[in-house]
Image (cartoon, rainbow, N blue to C red; front, side, top):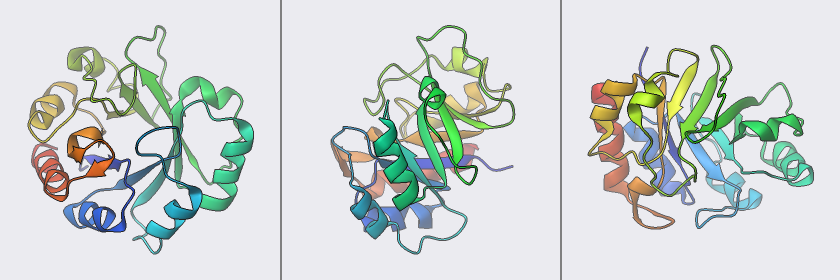
Amino acid sequence: MSLFIKICGLTERNHIDIAINAGADAIGFVFARSVRQISIENALLISKDLPEHVMRVAVLLHPNKEDWNKIAQQFKPDAVQTDAADFDYLTVPTSIEKWPVYREHQYGISPPKNKKFIYEGQKSGHGECVDWRKAATFSSLGKLILAGGLSHENISEAIEIVQPFGVDVSSAVESEPGKKDSDKIKAFISNAKRCG
């Protein structure tokens, strides 16, 4: 099975097309407060007519129910990614996959078996690298998508140590915060695919 690759925080259609053409499996749209935050209207606009195999992921952080319900009804993502505890109060339609985020500093992490989950550092989108050897202890428990501090320069080592189901990148494929870089997107996906 080939490595699952998600490019997160995209706000322009040309970067989405570049990521997909390079082999991305999922595109993350950040609805949480961030330099990469996007409105539902813009997310719908730039994700129109994506290939069926590419997942549109709504990325959140402690959303209120009203905001989430609006995203679910209007944007209709293929998956929703937010901290694991958030799913205790969110109602998620069965048509939308739940991707709980587990953070390295947390205790008692128990990811769902045979389902996708994110493993990353304390803060999302800050290029904060996790301890790959610690992450590796969770990769056999489910479909671990490794995030945090990954780049085209370190992705091969990360994959070799963690053996994840997938990888997720945002800040390392930018020329400046919130502005994606086409060459970095291509380099990251190319190097990840070579190792995965």
